[in-house]
Structures are given as structure tokens and as C-alpha cells.
Image (cartoon, rainbow over all chains, first blue to last red; front, top):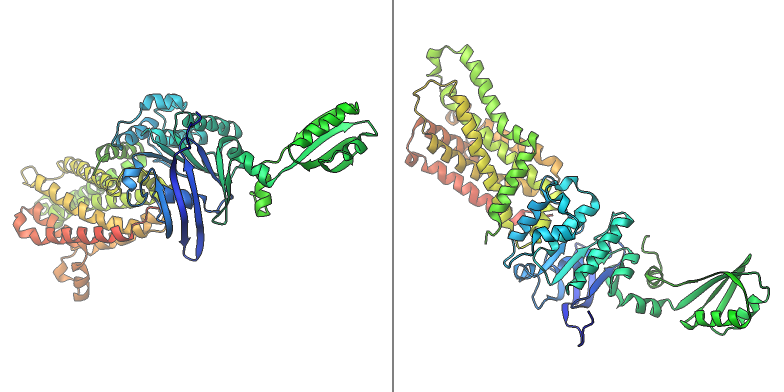
Length: 311
Length: 249
């Protein structure tokens, strides 16, 4: 769904600071989240993602700054807010021996407005067969799907997902991504945190990069990459001896390195790839391999912080 | 305000019953102790003196009943600390569920458990106690529920301070069992050394024992208003205290 007018912002965070003892968890954090988008707060563990999110959910009171969600003060109007948002917490658990349907049924009874059809929700999340299973017997992916179900039970306007796919295998992770896209399709706003750059890149419309409690930059993944990592790389393999000199003549190519038959061309800007292809056809250079390497959010993070997110 | 209370209470009861060891231990333990002591006493004490032995007549039922209470408090403290450690309390708190609803549900579960165990105890007791001995069972049940309700509030204070779930059971046992020993159940408070008497007088279990013994013997409630007031005071103080120091995560 493409909004026709300027999107309405549903979350406003401005100048938020939170300290635990002498540790500053988040400092001067400001951003806005628009209606109907998937917004990701990304950064390494301990960067302040969860603190920020729990401040927005009304679970933590910031020392300084202003937060507004759907026009409400999340701390003072927490019960009013909780009726309109859905929350999945990082590393949350339920009672070991609570059954899936009991949890959904309990949650459905907690909200003022009429809940969504619980059985259909379980069906949508692939939990229908597990409705009588104890929580402790569910797999990691099933537990997360149940938590998504609980976050959606009150048909919320904004859904918060904290490190949703941490600890899941790649297959379960992909299935969860599909579910999150489905939430957006229903017109809901999704606010998520992740330390997985691939997840952010594939899922988020916009991301805010947070490091040591401060937001470094906010934009769509594509624009962040363009802005911070404009380098493009083309790797190709050829037997043609004149190839290297031809490539060096292209103005956009900054460097050419060669190992055996494989050439690696680096340069700036989107034109690089076109120019290289143009050069290949003009000089009738035969290649046996051709691929482009585009920078990703991981590279952006490395560039902005000077270290990899996994360190 | 208490939206979701009954549903949560019912779910917690079902969850409790699904944990066979926990349910059996909490309900079975007081009943087994009661039957065990009664059998031994029944064999060694001639029937004639059975009626006059005040411990067997009054002390033992009260002791067994208080074991129910202590067990309930132990189980409450353990469950609360496990829920806190596992993030369950935090998860529940991120819903419109009010914190007091979560705690109220647990208190109701424990009171129901106390009543159920007492019924079992009475059924078991029918075999060992002469027919015709009149015991005000309804009043006694009521007295036990008041005592449990009051002592559960101590449980919340303990649950607020235990560092991890692993320490929950031993710490609360170390607090509650000594209270039981000096509560006047095994030795009249008046015959204790003066210092111990003073100490005993500030312990809530002492008032629970006094109330339960009195009601069991057929005293009027009016004569035990002081005990009830003390138990209510304990509840008010401990609830206020735990509201201040209780940690959700």
C-alpha cells in the first residue's frame, strides 16, 4: 500500500536518555516512525535497542526526553496504550505447562475491545495443530509464532517485536519474516529491533542504526548503503590479455586487481556496472564469470562504527 | 480493574495440577504427617488419655493445618521467583493485566489449595478421632484462610528479596519453619524465656496458632479479635512493604 499523502507518524521519540547507575544506556535518542511501515532499530547487543523499545512500550521511564505513541504518553497512559499496541518481548517465557490455546484465550480476555478470532489467528501462524500443546514442548520457532499471535490478539495498530528471530534456524527465520510482512500488509505499523543486518535489510522499510546508546543514522536501507558505501565491485574471469588495460581506461573504475584469471574492479556509483558491460561488448572481451558485489547494511555498519556488528 | 482475574486464576490452578510432584507435595505432605503422627500416637497412648492429651486433640490438627499454610507460602515464593526469572511476570505485565491482578490470582489459587487440603485432612482425621467430638469446621476453615492470607503476604516480601529462584525455597523455609517452632504450638508462650516471649509476640504465626487453637476448641470469635487484628495488621504491613520492594524482573 502506497500512501498518497505524507505518512502520519505514529511514534515520536525526542531527546530520550536513560541511565542505569553510572551506565548510560541510551543518550539523546530521537526518531519518528510512520504509519504502516516496518521500522527497524538495529545495532549490536547492548547498544540500547531494548531500552529504547521498552521506553516506547511504557515499561521503562526515561530519565529525560519525550515519547509519544499514537498520541499517548506511554508511561502515564500505559493501560490505554496497551489496548492499542501488541508487544513481543526479548527472551520472554510463559508458564511451562500453559497450553497454547489457554495463553491465547487469556490474552484475548484482557483487552477492552473485541479480540480477533483466536482460532483463525492460530491457523494463520501455523499453530492450529499445537493448540493443546504445553508451552515447554514448543520449538523455538513455534514459541516465537505464539508470541506473535499474542502480540496480534487485540488487533493492534502498532506491533513491537524485540529480537524476534534470535536463536532461530534460517528456515524458521524466513517463515517469521513472511509473517511480519503479512502484519504490514494488514496496515499495521511494525517497530522491531534486531542485530541481524540481513533481517533489517530484507524486512525494514526504514532503519535507525544505534551504537553505544546513540542513533548514528536513519533512512531506508538502500539510501543508507548509497550514502555510506557507494563503492561497487565487479568480479569477472577472462583469458583476454588486453582486458585489464581496457578496464583501467574506464573513468569510473578506481582500481583493478588481478589474481590468476580473475579480475576485481572497484569503483564508485551505479554507472560502474553499465560501463564495464559496455566495455566488454565494445572490445569483444569474452568472460567466463561475471558478478557484481553490492555493499550491504553490514558494510554500512562497519563504515560508521569502525567495527563489525558481531564483535 | 481485575479484568482477566478469573481466567488467570483458573489457568494457574490447571497449571499447578499439571505439575504432579508440586501438587502432590503441597497437598499430600501435611496429610501424610498428620496421619503418621496420629497412627504413632494412637498406638502408644491409651485411648483413655487420648482425649485428655491436648496436643493430639488440639495441637496436631492445628500443626497440620499450619503446614498447609507454610507449604502454600513456600510454593507461592517459588512460583513467583521462577516466573520472575523466566520473564513470565514481565510478559504478563506488558498486557493490560494489572500487576495486582497477577498477584491476586496467585493468592486465590493458594487459598483454594489450602481449603482443598483441609478437606482431605478432615476426611483422614475421621478415622483417628472419636466420633462425636464437636469441631466447628466452617469457623476453623475460615480461621485457616485468614491465617494463610496473612502469611502469604510475608511470602510476597520474601519473594521480593530472594535473589534467584534457586534460593526461594530454602530461604523461605529458613524463615517460616523457625516461626512455626516458637509459635506456641509446642510450648505455651507463657512458659518461654522472657526474651523469646517478646520475639514470639511479633511473629504472625503465633497469632495464627492462637486463633486456630481457640476456634478448634470452640472459643467464640469475639475472644480472638486481637489475633485477627494482628493477622490483618501483618497483611497490611507486608503488602505495603512488598509493593515498595517487589521486583518484576
